Image (tube, rainbow, N blue to C red; front, side, top):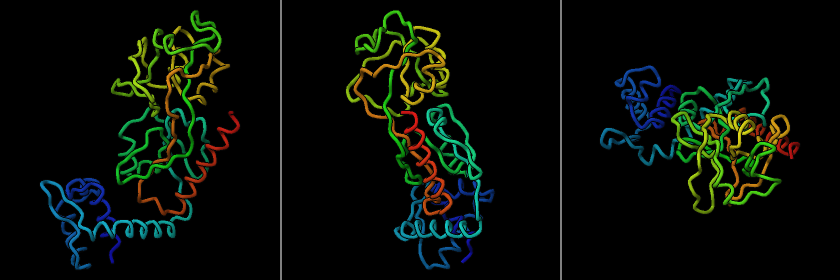
Length: 284
């Protein structure tokens, strides 16, 4: 069987659209349609059915999907002895990883949906982030969890020692992390109970911006414990337990399902898990 037909099939499945698959592959929509008809003729099976403007997979296509992905992964393993992977990680996880000959690192200040597009389009091979994804085309695996803490500058006029209750917390102004659309983001941590709105004194696109702003003002900031400890001494910060009951930050490796059974990619994921474990162990 022509492997190009299998690859085209997987791209069509990804986008659920002949038109979008054609744009991705640099082909025409009729060429994609003809390729899928050819695959159906070779297998004597119907693979897609139209539903409105989109297409849906038949039960046969659903059955073949993991088999085709696994087959292409095995071929890639045989052809590419050693791949150089592109790994994108958010700022909170960046200090935990070290680039190696097998992969390079790119830092993204805050979560953005374009990271998933980069995975789809082979621009990156793996993302380390604190926001798990639930889209069927992606795998999301937890590699480490840690608490969030509150930071303020040493010598803060109203925060003495490690005493910070919820009333004091909400009374202070905060430095808040926002995404590129100026929407507040919490790095994936979730309060267990309803919380009040914060008094926002300043916003920042990065955790680095947060620790710098807090060190030179009376603002409070909320961020992962590991990142706070990195800058506690250099910026003379106080680290305080978060007075809001919350869930731990969960670091996830996120990747496209096409790489699930790729041996080199499996080794990459295992290497990153090991680096996280070692890095956090030495920090704490």
